[in-house]
Amino acid sequence: EHKAKLFAWLLEQHRAALKAGGDCRPFMLLLPAWTAKWLPWRTFLWAMARLRSGKLDTTIEDAMEKAKKLSNLSDQLEVNAGVFYLAPETKYEYEAAVAAREEAPFFGVWFCGGFPDNATREAAVAAIEKRASKEEKGTTACVIPTLRALVEAGHAVGVEQERFE
Image 1 (cartoon, rainbow, N blue to C red):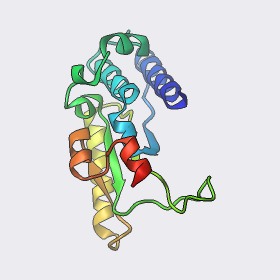
Image 2 (image 1 turned 90 degrees about the vertical axis):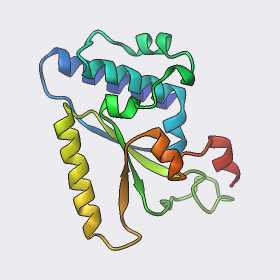
Image 3 (image 1 turned 180 degrees about the vertical axis):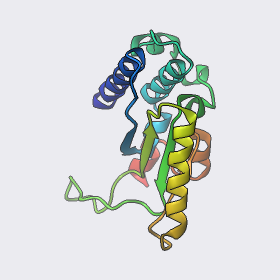
């Protein structure tokens, strides 16, 4: 529930900035990779894509009404919404909240978006890729443009599968 509220807040901040004629603030969220398959995230992307196309009255409620199931949503939502994923080469290590668990139960991925236009998004991607090319192996991250590419890279398995691996 807290992630869905965060997405609604981000959408409203973005919408308000566009309506006021101001600059949008980019975001970078470190979330479990399975979130990219989750309906509230896909719904948020649908709404962000509509805002980017100039439909400034789009709300999260509109998006929830239109996107009843994942099959209704485009394969290119990330591109249309100006979002990309940044996946580390190796799984992040976390301090376990549960003593019995020695590693994170999910693959953490950065969800990056909120760029005012495609040129700014592409500049961010280019800067990340330039930096990654200079890092030593094992410390880099790769830019992943879509959910399909995230799945193909092996990062976005289902939440149940990640919990039991």
